[in-house]
Image 1 (tube, rainbow, N blue to C red):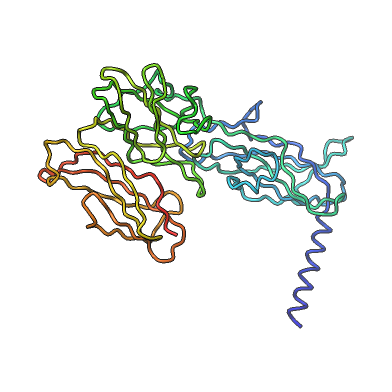
Image 2: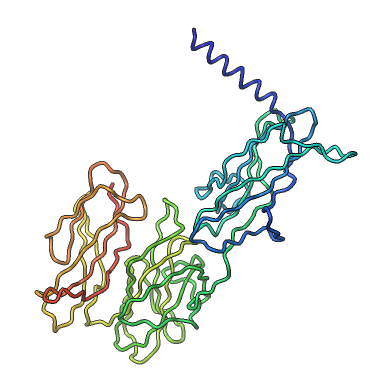
Length: 399
């Protein structure tokens, strides 16, 4: 009996609140505080750190005798639509929800019937959020509709970043490659018009950077290592894109799986261009190391995976070794670490399958998780690395 009375009391309170909260509201202004902008855009000067922002919001109430309660919230979204933002997986709330009550409203100047509420709405834009829009969501109980309604601001502030200052954003600024790995990034890079379909990606390439080399052999391998991705969502699987062009920017081939690409049938003395981008996901920033090697020298040329079972995988490194170095004087150093997507925390590594192989076993019952691996060759007699780290960028899923 007590439970029934308690439930009845809660329903009664809800009905009273709904009746008292009725109003018809209009969003009058939605502006960045203390920032003048004529094109509804917001410039993020440093995308690596969160950005504090604040918006001024003015709500008009129709009807002086109605309380006009409502809730307002700032949203960030990369949805291409102008409605149903919350159904898009990129949408997040930037601010705490602010509750506007009857005491927040003011009466306009004499002779005007306007009754309005002004609210400041502070928020924090997360780091690496530079490709979406900021939208205001407001929710209230409509008198005319006799139901709760959710509406969004007509004004939407596009988040932007400064124009590219990347020196190798275009092929004319391509950086020379050598066997010594150098650090690279796609931060601030824009797309290039040259052959927009390497690996079938078309106009999805929005952040490419360029390198170049002069062929000293008929075969060269471009290798990426220590790859990291930023501005990704949990459901996204970014990959590394590598494409090679001749001196006339004629397309020769590409790779978007293994983190390396071997160009063959090259002409010694000719210049070739290398294009790097984050593949499979737009608006993702990538950092990496990049190096060039010649066939016949010490280089890891790839990693292949074979599944022993749903929870067991063997990775095998393929390699090219200088004839002057005996294979008995070479060892392979492996590292296994959690992947970027649903990172695995319960797995083990069993060595001994072979010096150039590694056996990975997923833990029981952890669900769909991933790990990544990298490997390098080392000289046993001198303990000196013969190669940079080669990163296995394809995902290993444990079911």
